[in-house]
Image 1 (cartoon, helix red, strand yellow):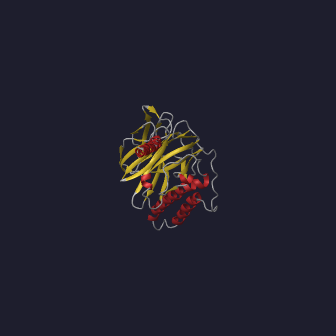
Image 2 (tube, rainbow, N blue to C red):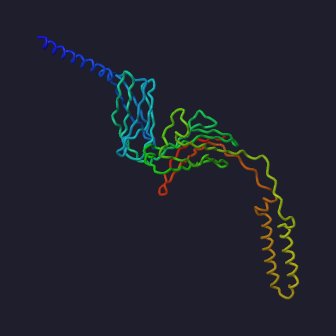
Image 3 (tube, one colour):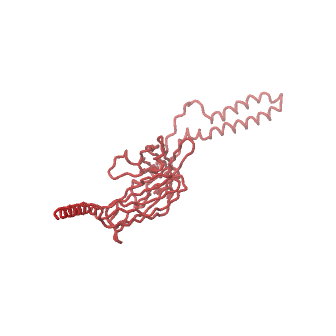
Length: 340
């Protein structure tokens, strides 16, 4: 009987041990189930706005992070990592390359709440989207987005950021350079970018985490817009290189001298009279006109005063262009220039 009791005791001890081991395992996976929903807004060129909502039983999850992932050309690509706001929502915008994309949002979970993944959202991009162009930090600042207001004679600036898509940079085997320019400026205005060429590497990110050094952010350039005020005084005329010659003097002297020379032969050959008159009129016309040409006017009166940049509202296009030696990729964005 004792042997039976001992075996029964061992079985009870083993069962108790198995129960004790199972309890911590259940505790590690405990938490409230969550639901992650992903929706896509209207595709704008190469930029896809997204909205993520995470809830638990209908109640928003107000903390934690969400990753945006893309299945593109058979590869899994991490597009962005965003933080949920106090409404349980995140609104990232991602840059997509040309092709078909399957986007998902993954809530990583927090203490008390389990991780969850959204249903895939399919997006098709037909535009060649190696990179996008964004404008920011307008100086002087304006209450209206992407607007620069200047008084004629004043200069302003803004920051240009070239944001490459992750899918594109992951396939780069050599650095790519993007050249910046602008068009649509009014007369008497100019633009310049420093630097004019931006370099994109396979390691260039498409976002800049807060507090990160410039080396770990997308490349940027500063573009300056210069306008001009009207000059108030006329510039002094330059000093002629040779004071001894005068087009007006020659216009009077040469025809007169020629006329006197031809007068000696009038009696012998009457046809010389007509010829001399034709030559006389021609020389007066040519040499007299030379005294009124633009160069003569400039040398004796100086250049006219410069006009100011015309006031008005102008739509300016900022262009970023890259080339691989075979094809060129161009992306444009615009801002409003107001000249007072």
